[in-house]
Length: 78
Image 1 (cartoon, rainbow, N blue to C red):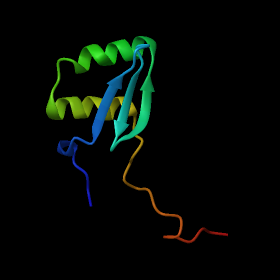
Image 2 (image 1 turned 90 degrees about the vertical axis):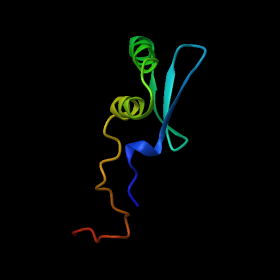
Image 3 (image 1 turned 45 degrees about the horizontal axis):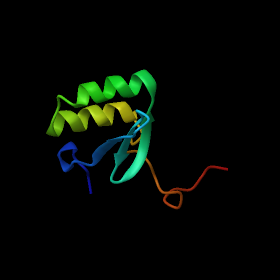
Image 4 (image 1 turned 135 degrees about the vertical axis):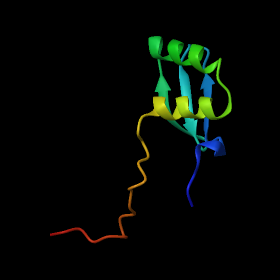
């Protein structure tokens, strides 16, 4: 099954201390602090839908490339 950006998989929360936590399917994947958090919150406040999802995907980095394998799926070379 392939997730598309329209699935609204990303969410964010701004904490009282100014940190911004970006979650993917309910699991936190990135925490922004200081200037990065301030820049993120000012940018995302003007975005909705797909554009907001793309920004959150961008700030989390390339954490999911699509080429992951399960350990039992392939044999390691000795």
